[in-house]
Amino acid sequence: MWERIKQFGIDLKEHFKTRDYRWKYKLVVCLPIFIGLLIIDIVTKQLAFKYLSHDEFAPVVKFIDGFINFKFVINRGIAFGANSDNLAGTITGAVFITLIAFSLFLYLNNKIATVGLIMITTGGFGNLIDRMWNDGGVVDFLAWELFPPYSIFNFADMCVTFGVVVLVIAIIVEIIRYYYIRHHQEEEEENE
Image (cartoon, rainbow, N blue to C red; front, side, top):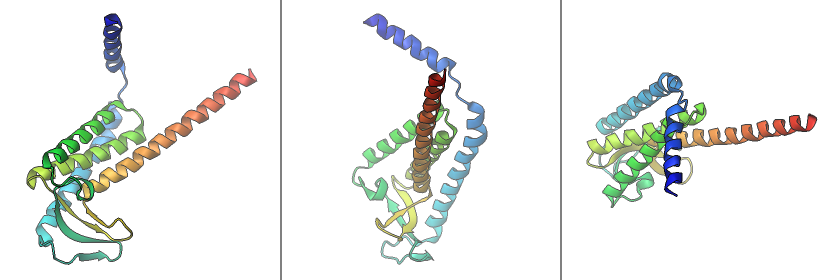
């Protein structure tokens, strides 16, 4: 049994050592996406912090009425304010999810999936930075009003949401590609 475990460890090490990680694509395409989105997130949060009223009873600032407006909120929880009474758990969960997304980003070679994962990583990282600046809270300022659930979020949250959408699209494309290739291989085997 120990020999199998030892061999598994050797095989795993060899796999990671010889894998093509497509660093050029990740540095040329994904790194600028990460930096650009992170700058937009930090700047928008700072603008919201500076120009929006911090009074929780202040009316929303109209932007696109009935769709999205501005309202300043410090969110101490995760999505939709959940888990706001457990700051340590919230930060631990955010760090864990961000590290998983970044680890998958480093490992995967699918270009669409890596863009989705870098968006998720950027959003998580942006909110973690914000939690350091705001005593564990995140600045939320975009008030969604088009249809329920009505919520207040920020640019980093949008990055995470769109990153998940892109990741799901990448998974669907890979599934279709897999079955398409498999179908053609079966046809070629039948024709031989």
